[in-house]
Image 1 (spheres, rainbow, N blue to C red):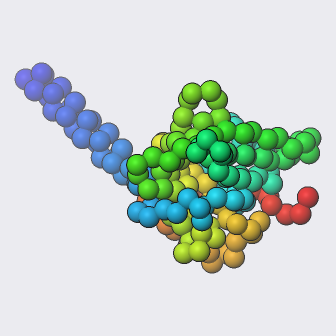
Image 2 (image 1 turned 135 degrees about the horizontal axis):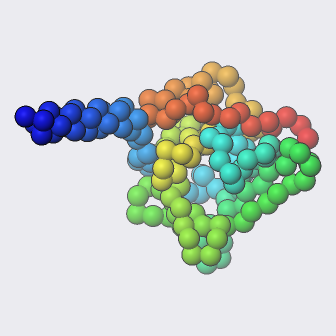
Length: 175
């Protein structure tokens, strides 16, 4: 009889864990249509999830340009809050067969997934996520977004299952 109770307890716990995980599922499906030529250029980072590569940076920008070899040059830069020094990282990206999904590399042959989740009609803003729910960015063509636009983008991210309370707003005020 103890075995039956133990098995029942294990099943209940497994269902509870599965239910909790399902509640945290994040939809990382990229946009259905994506025009790389319209996406190229400079983007200002308006908000992001904090992670070690960008920790302590403000005034963050990302620039995307075509390279002669068909790949995309990715140049990320930001100012270290502590020292005021500008840090720059250059990488490369390639399109995939999935619209809105790129593969980005900043180190040798190691690529990460880059998903353009949502876009403004005129490509004036973008919501971008990574392969995991640990990465999320709100980007804009301008250093600031109107508050109603920012809140709309946050709502879109929340509807996809992201924990938008984790968003860190990036200082883009004049340097």
